[in-house]
Length: 341
Image 1 (tube, rainbow, N blue to C red):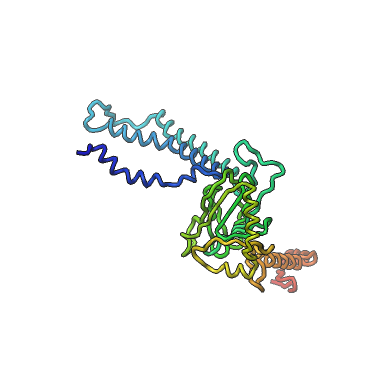
Image 2 (spheres, one colour):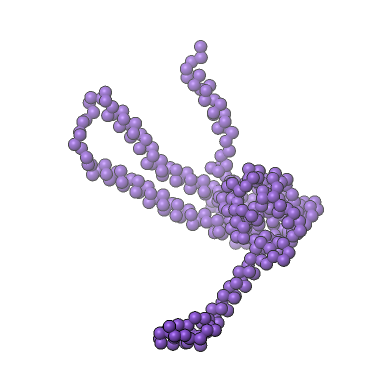
């Protein structure tokens, strides 16, 4: 006969085996920003457990002490107040909330994705000569496009970065909002059409992992993943040269419009060259010929608004308006005459 404790262990073994396969990268990342975010999670949970654990313990203790069969427990039906108990009940949570709010406020500003990095890792400040590697990330349906403007290459569903080099991502999207997330590297940011989000991060160890869109964005969302690798600087340079030498073609506007069409489970692609203004046109939604770029459209609208304001509120018109108001008259438009009410 199998002992009862052993039978219970056999029942739990499949669950423990399943848990053994869990990926704990969120709590044990290899990038400094993600590591600081993991520490913030731990601190927040510990602070909250300072309330949760005592409350759960007291529930059990009170239920046991004041059970019906315990005739030795004090019976005080008229008791309704304790100053000491009130101080503990209200003071302890208030103090924890203040500490938690302070920690969160400091971390929110320190880990702001737009904030330039001030260190490579703990105890390792960024050298004065260090220059961030700019990577332009575009969320498409349903794949990821990465443009390396300084290296003049582009990839689809593959992101390779050098270790211990500041990274500056410029994240946008083509049609719908997508969440750009590499657990090894940093927190999640959203890419939106016609907008650009900046994410500063750094990879501290060589790693092979995966990044993905972490919020639902359509039919191919579950396969909207890309390979992520952190490599040494020399290996990164070699990868760039091999991408150029492979002759994967040039990602110009015509090829981009083909790539932009929705597709699922898109294989890794590498482009040996890329149009210098392609990302600018993606961001301003004017890749197609004949479409006015959004920034030009907004600048033209702002210019027209300024010209109308100058025409409407020229010194002469302003004086006429003040005179009309003083005489109880109404001024309509710059070209209209002053009319009596």
